Image (cartoon, rainbow, N blue to C red; front, side, top):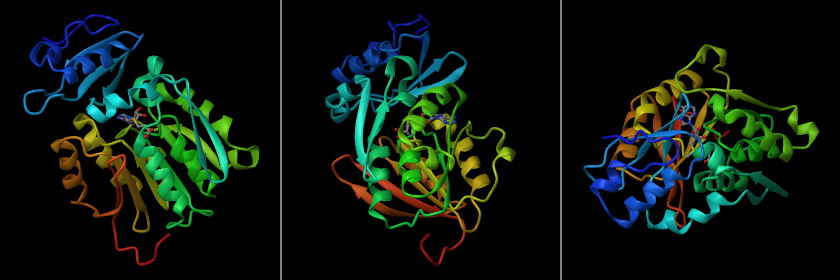
Length: 277
Ligand SMILES: C[S@@+](CC[C@H](N)C(=O)[O-])C[C@H]1O[C@@H](n2cnc3c(N)ncnc32)[C@H](O)[C@@H]1O
């Protein structure tokens, strides 16, 4: 029975079914939100802990499950701010787990993708990029600091917080190259041109319900000269399923792996890009 309590998840099916430490952590993770939440178990029969789908107001969100590593790193999600050093600048990102959950904290995949961009394998100067599921916007901010024109997107509910972080971390002359926009995967895609050189996404492959729409969005945005870079932690078989789906319309290859955080970066292209961006 899905929990229907407001605010605190008292009856998560996972807590009832698997009284493991991980499951309890997952339950408490769910309880952390101060806003009304409704919890439903997406799947928990095969490999607990499973992904928890949380209906947050009218928006669908997901709680990324704990594993031992994540539990160890849990505290960082509760810090009101996180500081990074990229592109010769110090970047201060505000976080607010209690208000927005997954969209208001910086995930390892974002840090790994920023590090990869900073390595300079891809020349971002004057390139146009779009970031999907930007959360706090760290990746988009770094791409802009490295010279790209960036459209930073997420669901409507995340935009105010996202914009605040973006504006706070970019000097005025760079802000003019950046826009923050709503893009809920699969929706209103006609508003977005197919002219981007680069599509960026960090930790956006985690919720099976969104896979079709995410793929549709990538297909819409991607032209023959576009490069997609997805930074992913592969937590479950279903994440691998997305990669299989991605390989149908795109050529996919792994271009980087960060062992410390277990984050992979995959490149996907529609055609054969003969030269790197
Ligand atoms: C795990 S967070 C990653 C945030 C950020 N990219 C990072 O790595 O720090 C997943 C992000 O995907 C966004 N998201 C989830 N479902 C979405 C959807 N259907 N359309 C657009 N964005 C979505 C969430 O709002 C959230 O910001």
